[in-house]
Length: 237
Image (cartoon, rainbow, N blue to C red; front, side, top):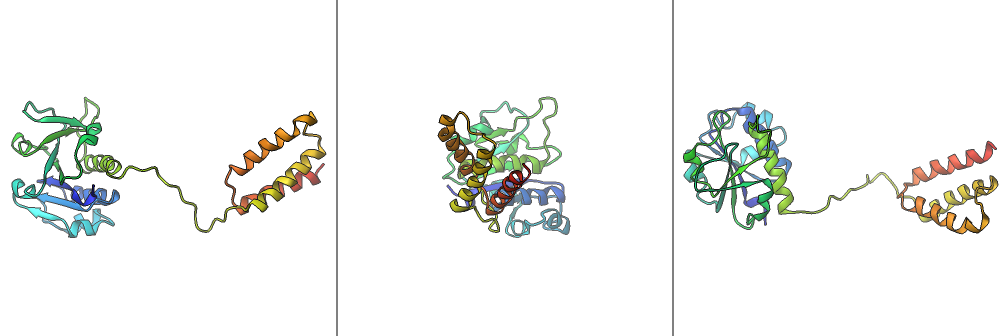
């Protein structure tokens, strides 16, 4: 499965701002292919480039076609987005159904113009229609909003993985020695106020304290701060 095999097709888009915003949404989720069919504005133009912000590369490498049949000629599966249920012999899917799609094939997500969406004729090119769940009394979504919802969903399906959280390179993790020194200072002060009682429970209480401090993943700076706190508390008695 490759993100390079996913295309986002805008059929007769009317507003430059929406085209630029769609390019930005595509790049947000590391997709590459923007396809335009008979856009109303001159393409590209300064307004499109301005609203794409950092996604000018998506605009510059996009493809423009005069007809929908040419735009989808190299695509295996076309999924048309529609806020309306079509009384046609076509499979209707929702966002959760996307996991059933074979993303080893070339997939194209087709979006209609801002004013009228996709006609039944344009829907006839699709293998599926996709409906994004919205307020039944207010179904209309902005073009770029529809695209970014689908892009986020597909990105999670193509390369599902748990997010990894990285520390700043400027933050140094506390060493075991630093944590042990801080913990010893804490225990000394707790001993002075006769905290560990009854005495027979002291080993278990110490075990619990170690569990607390070791699983906190403290930085060296945080360990020094805590050591200063424990030292100050000891002096004030």
